[in-house]
Length: 79
Image 1 (cartoon, rainbow, N blue to C red):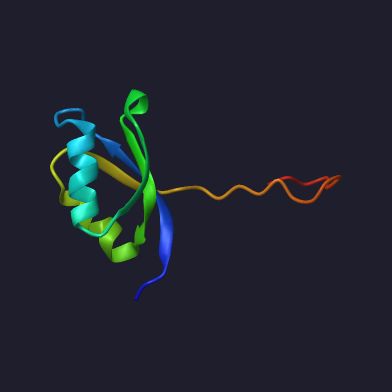
Image 2: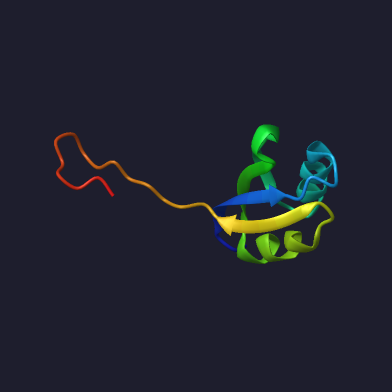
């Protein structure tokens, strides 16, 4: 099984966002959070699943979620 990464799916708005989330799940995308106000769905999937869901009706874009690390307390570098 491929390693899973965190992804942000931006929806186009021409399909109900919860219907898009359901279709993503059917393709193997693990939906974590649906943020209707931003037309976004956060979740995790392997690279091949993330590529496949780009073709789902209502999906405008699929991007790997950026990683952020605040470091240990007192660290001078936080990114």
